[in-house]
View 1 (tube, helix red, strand yellow):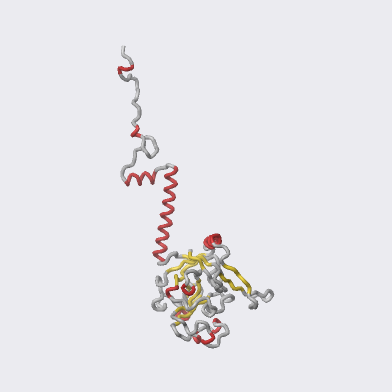
View 2 (view 1 turned 30 degrees about the vertical axis):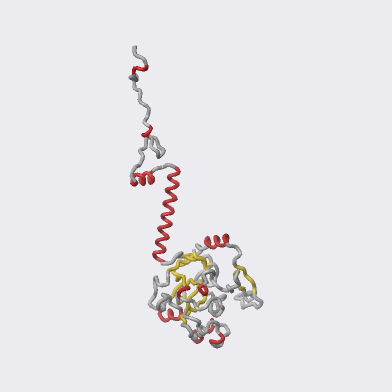
Length: 289
């Protein structure tokens, strides 16, 4: 009579499973990928929870990166969008708009000032060239080239050269009470550059250079030219900025009221100043998005 030591009995018994048959991927019986191609296929098709989460994150990041590279390729500037903070470009741009910008030389018009890619309003009128409802390019620039100040988005009105008396070329309604170049700030021009102004005829009746917002804007101070606006899409960017740096802009009233569009309710003029005390009244500041 044979005992247990004589060997395994017949009757369908099976040997213990080989531990190597259980893949390290976590699924019993699943073969372990070996080549990079097999690992990529596994990561793309497997339905494990943690792998699926990682895969979705990787796909989302890749899409964002691809869109960013595409926008940079088209715009030639980064970031290619700005969020509008105020209303000095109204009615052609509004607060909370998101504006797509490009490098000035990206889609330069033949009427642009040589070497700048920008068409000022006086040149644009002769060529019937307009952007955002009026003649001339709308530009985003750093005031006086100061990177610590919030960029401004206003329209390029004139191109002036160093030492130029540009009083006679100026719009009489945009130079205040000045009766000659001697009474006009930044005249003669301290250097080559653009004379700029917001489109809002209530808050921006004068050139930025007359109001002391900036010297004539040098081409190297220009971040980009505005090409397309999307209403309300800049609101999120502005809210994030408010959360990260609240209270950076204060508003104070002036002593002399200006004429109100509503004869019943006179409007007090306001001067917006930042921590450096720079006058911000009627300036359409924008945040790079």
